[in-house]
View 1 (spheres, one colour):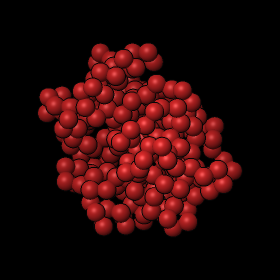
View 2 (cartoon, rainbow, N blue to C red):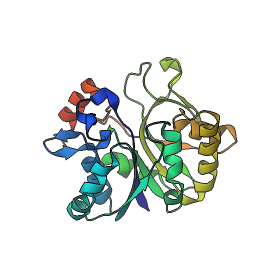
View 3 (cartoon, one colour):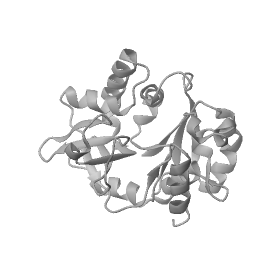
Length: 245
């Protein structure tokens, strides 16, 4: 199993930080970045290899690659997304389709979360599960969250921001365990999604899979402090959280 990080996004709502850096390299605890936290989590659960999908300001990640490898004892492979500033992240994850064949824990490059999330996903592994989403079933939901509906018998049935929060089982936090045997089907679903609309999120690829009859499972993470960093308010929350890890 390897780690995979989506770190190609521009994060324009975080300017001026992202004038010169991708969102994943914005500091959240001193010099510690969002990417540092994710790599630290991966190292703690025993992973030794990580793919990082880069695009916007990718030179900054390339410049830090050796230092990050030395700090976390990881072999990093940088995967270029040539359309990072034009298309959304369904295409970005598709760029990592070969990495997924190795079994991955996927983490969005803007999610600050503790290592307990990865440990929860690993504990949920097995019993034929091919894709497992980390799900927050505690948080009060609003319009912006990536909401998920779960059927106890069928697994995930719906994932979208465009849902009445009252209908949702919880929020997908941007971390997924994907078994290699799901790689080809997921890649095909992602391609279907971004070819129909390049601005689609990769979560729409998950919905496409479910619509085809593929089962996607979830793992509730419990009452855990985490945040998806999209803007400066989120960054302030991320800094409060990160210093507690």
